Length: 317
Image 1 (cartoon, rainbow, N blue to C red):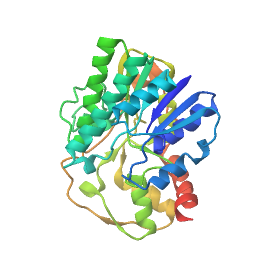
Image 2: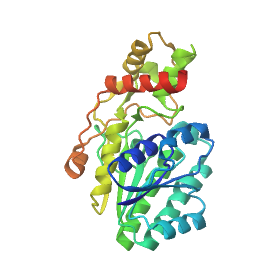
Image 3: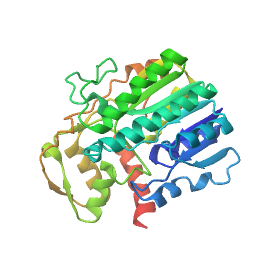
Image 4: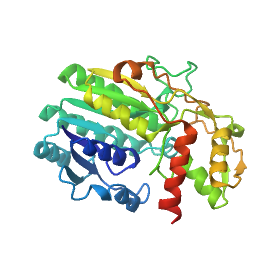
């Protein structure tokens, strides 16, 4: 299969590229290497893909519609995994235009290019943040998700809706995968596993909202990649599907696991909870099991141990 992956040099994208190449697919790895975090880290993520006979690297911006159209016309991908985006809920506050231009506008460029060449399946990386402060637990895909707490989830929800339009009008298979708190080796430096680990090592204070009584549903990178590949291999028309573990964990417990791995105590503070932060993320994964045979395998302690091993090898050295 010829698969175009946007955000290919990022945390999730680099793992996905490796897995698809291992199983024999052809990959078009697209990334613009922006400076939201160190571009050198992104280039390191995919250094092993250079000169791979079944991988074509394209340095391009999804906001550049002309270049995107050219890449699609030349490479003719059969399927697309759209991971590229500005992420981070709190960073999006005050940056609504940036998130609109990149996350929505860039996604429209990709959808238009996919429509033009007849792409068979479009898999979109959405987020558990679209659920906002829903009172329905666990989070289920039938929730209206019409009260996003920040520009980032609002932009993702907008693309979910536009995906339906392209499915309805143009017959595009479109699956939006709502990722829940993804973590693992190569995790971004603005993500909580990295922040907590790095802060303990460097003896910096860590802010835990609501006294650490927030809960998050942590999902290991290998399980997320399994879900993405299953969605690639099984076009299902138009669907919204949670990819989580279904086991919320208190942030105090999360920090304690990392403390034991590192061998030092964290320096904690308890700042006020921002309006952008829900008290809990909690995935209902019944639909993912039914449609994608999704079955997450990695417990949090195991996954954090692997993250810590990577951190020691790649960050501390």
